[in-house]
Length: 389
Image: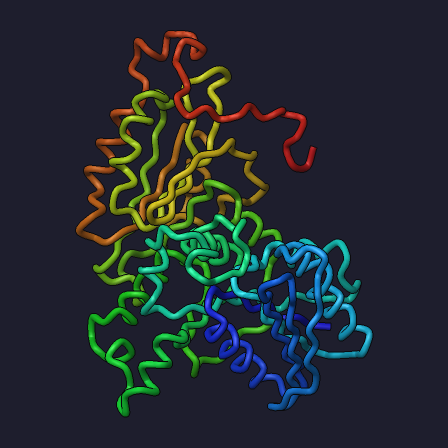
């Protein structure tokens, strides 16, 4: 059985995306899952433009993982046993596609082929979602009070794993269209929030196909190894050309490489300045602390965090940088940082000067790295726990 997975923050975007994907496959079964309050999950099954099944069940624990393990994955197995040729699975808003793919890898049907991982977004809402400081629960995207992720954090993670981004109207845009006789200005005006969001997508998902509702989908494009590599904490992806049709001058991505380890205290002091105005901040840094440890830097809108970096997966850097050969040279660098934001807020020279000022001097390089305090308080990682060992 072939599977197309659709994730989104907006249930309206997700439902429209599922419908559009299914339109190109006459015998597709379309399944929508929704996590409701009080640990309830709703499953609706569509076939050939009509609802053929609707089930609601109570879970012992209404968490996202339980929803995937106890309802989403069993549904996939059920349709595979029934001989369904193509299943389009719309995940509950806020459920990460990676969680589902991993559970399917372990407990899914043996003949399952993942064709496409698709993320559905409304471009006119994208920038606000990137900068929204509220948790997914506080913003009304999930019914779980314990879900402390922010919308930008969720979206960037889905973009990394996804193969395709489908731009469709969200609930608020659709309501505007219903209230007005004309198409909402967000969809038509030059320089509008819709077009701005499309431009931003060119920087947030440089690897993926960004499609509109009238475009044709490319089946069979999901590559698990490549998707995992893109999703690695601190992985840097940047547009191959800043003048790409989706990347005009509204937004800019600056990639800066450093040959020396960074002084932890100086980086700690200057990190807020680096993150200011950045829609998306990411990279892998080598800190001058015991063992010259490598850390992954992540930042989306108002939230910035660091964590111990994993060893790069084989081929994990290939094709992620604009110029040929850059990925190979990067292997010897002490750090690489990419900053994406509005062109007026992200100055290449300022980014370079800020990061260069955090590098160790010649005198500091001669010192034992244990002498440098680590203000980040990152936990140590046992080398024996690296993936693949």
